[in-house]
Image 1 (cartoon, helix red, strand yellow):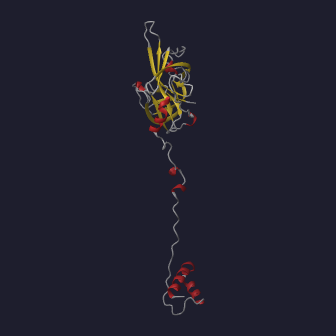
Image 2 (cartoon, rainbow, N blue to C red):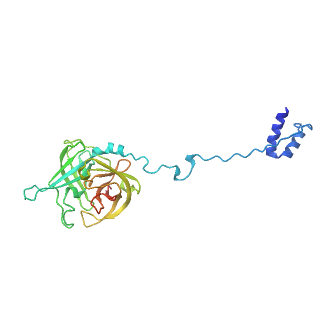
Image 3 (cartoon, helix red, strand yellow):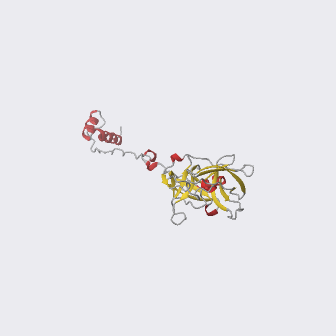
Length: 276
């Protein structure tokens, strides 16, 4: 064995067993003779602990936040065709009192042409005393995103949840139903989008987050409170009533119904009826 090789072997053994013992062992087996004049002891540091990979770190730091996949433009592209503007006319003008009109929003929920909205859009609920039976609108029209307007019939309404149902004939205009979600799994902070016709501006999109759930608010159509409303900071203005509140997956989780305002315009506090 050459001298450099001897030194290397001794260095490794020294690091493991200690310099003195390694030298004695080397002489005993003939690896080192008495003429060896210099022995180096090399200390090899222990390897450092490997840093865990990012996907091995426990906790929420490595997990995406809820809503990172929210794409408002894609949601609008896929769902706006299913949202409609509703015009309700009250009276025929023959009594001399003229014709009152109501404008709101709605959304198609079936291929048969059924449309959900608020009861106060298609009836006098909210305009009469809470102990009086509301009257249905005499005439109802539905306007689609392309501007075409078709007649609709009132199927029914519920003043306690402020929900109304109307129906259009799919033969009059093609319909694009939107999917319904599960409002029981809605959580504070998740992104939502509202599509409707605020102030008559058809097919308008607004976005925000769920600000609270299970809010108890005054009903505008009955004397009983709504006890499970979804609160949002997405702008909800007059004319948005009856329109859909979508979650990030493009499913309807609520029917936009009210704003809480001192000025009569949106102030960051809107409420929707849970779709469940």
